[in-house]
Length: 358
Image (cartoon, rainbow, N blue to C red; front, side, top):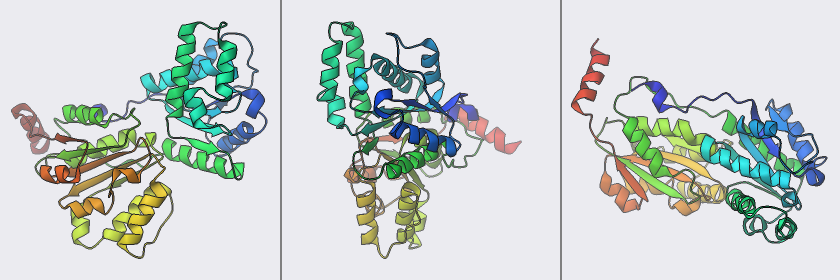
């Protein structure tokens, strides 16, 4: 299998971040400070400095959205009053669906439920648009607002705005500079397994899913999990790949495993006194975060429970992959979906042999 088929397709982005915001609400306050901090961190960010004028969004701006890796949407009180902003949002959500663009909503002194259900100031905005905008476009705007409000994002209501901005910057930095795992270039016969696993993960769904991978030893379970981890980890607030859990568990490294999960996702070196403290910290620190965790090569239920006692420990949209030789262990834990990695066919086995023999 060519290595290109197992990695994220390469796209050239003009901007790393696109900022969508209502000018009269946040242009000279929150959005300005966010933009300055992004630029200070070397993150190439587009901010539309033109006033929102005219009925139609400019084609150049639509192209800029397409050429951005991440879109940050700052929902404020009068965001939906602007047809320009709503057109931007519809385009952003289209790019999320078609181009895998990362979308991060910021709820700036607004309730996400108002965005989701178009109540409060958002209902007021749509009452103004009724009769002036085609019903088809209105439906697209409503669907985009609902979809965006269901994504994991940031809530700016209380506390210092500088702290909220720091949190946003840290999240974006992780997504733009993920720690990629090393993968052997000589891989054969994994294309179908990769496609199947990615399909099972349903990354666009906001549910919390646990997916199990099982098969005989040495068949490629860890390799497949690594490829998928490298491919989609940037879509999550935090990610952790726990390799060889079975071996590390036998060596008594339970605390080390828990500390790795916390360190990888929280971003700090956390020292634990005992396993119970680890369980409580994982539940407490990660319960509102959209995370991606891979627990590789387990052979006992307690090894999983140590790290993921329940999917409810994590925020909406989280994904957990468990790899094992024991299919019954996955059923005992209660995974949502499972996939068996099967042996190579005759032609694939010959290809693999030739790579190593000559």
